[in-house]
Image 1 (cartoon, rainbow, N blue to C red):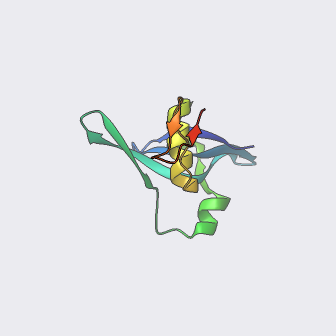
Image 2: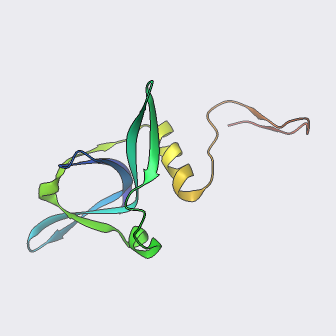
Length: 111
């Protein structure tokens, strides 16, 4: 089962992805799906971009297998970072906690 994690590679890249581990006869292989790279934008801001954008969509969905020796660590993300990632991958935007008010329509969405 895959879970959304941040994976730090030995190259220094920080990848946010749907992560899982497969055990093979040669050892563990990390499987990264729907990968986004995280990079600083300055002034305390972060940005996402699709990691390896030249790969086919099928490859992004089935996953990229990385030998365990190239993985420095894998960590869980806070809810806000997960929501940002899921919005980038799916195109859906998850509102932050609190009411969301439409402009002049009288509609109000509470989370």
